[in-house]
Amino acid sequence: MEYRPLGATGLTVSVLGYGASSLGSVFHPIDEEAGIRSVRTALDLGVNVIDVSPYYGSTAAETVLGRALRGVDRDSYVLATKVGRYGEADFDFSAARVTASVDESLARLGTDHVDLIQCHDIEFGSLDQIVEETLPALRRLGEQGKVRHVGITGYPLPALTRVSARTPVDTALSYCRYSLLDRALLAEAPRFAEAGVAIMNASPLAMGLLTRKGPPSWHPAPQPVREAAAAAARHCTDAGVDIAQLALRFAVQPQAFATTFVSSANPDNIARNVRWAAEPSDPQLLAEVERILAPLRDATWPSGRPENNVGGE
Image (cartoon, rainbow, N blue to C red; front, side, top):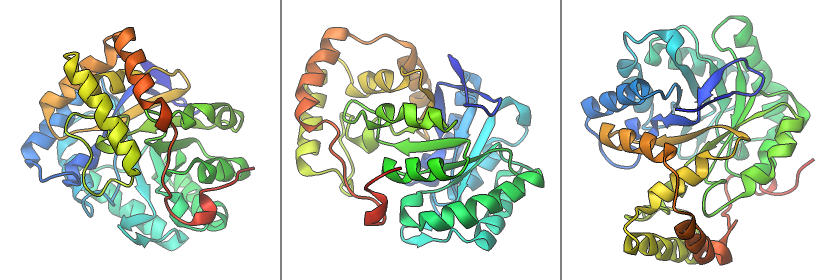
């Protein structure tokens, strides 16, 4: 396992991180014991950073993760959770709610502190409120020892760059924005670096687009993107390679990213992902897939408030 610094936090994290959304059965129902084994497998194989949220499975992911981490040395992993999003359309970034949310998460996770607390999907809120109310409230919790570092997450990069330009944040996490389909997150890396913000990448398989099975029916990608991804997946299958292997290896390589989160509640998949992240890809196959996807590269979809999807500082 390769490790990189998490910006200026003083923490060092594995290039492959464990995304715990699967523990909340957000993709399909899971076997809880298998989910717990998946967390332990990840830790045993050198994954040392875990990302979760009360939103995933309506707190189920945090609850299962807390059980999985019971008895594990607290100093052996970096734990990140989130505040502000609690349902499909349930957002509350007020100081009172996020303060209470942290205490609730700590109880579910069975710990007295999280290493990183993040405002979840900030594009659905007022960025002024995030800057002027939410982040200061989380910093105050840092003074109490409940959180150690503070970050922001979201899909549209303008929301992340605008907030990080206005106020200090330690990390920014975006999903589906650096993959075989989209390079935007890496293009914004210099701007985040200038602001002293560590970048965390998530969903290197583009929420199922870059898999043999394909995305779930609710996936927001436009139909041409879905069709191009399916064509690329078939091409890889014909070459005897799972496109997920190619996509995962591609996503973890940029040194500009501290870590890339991928989620699974299956311990065998975790072991496979760790192996895939370390194995070199076939450069010819990668070039062929790049050609298939090139016409649709960097295609996006709207998320959150329209004004948070455009512009920047």
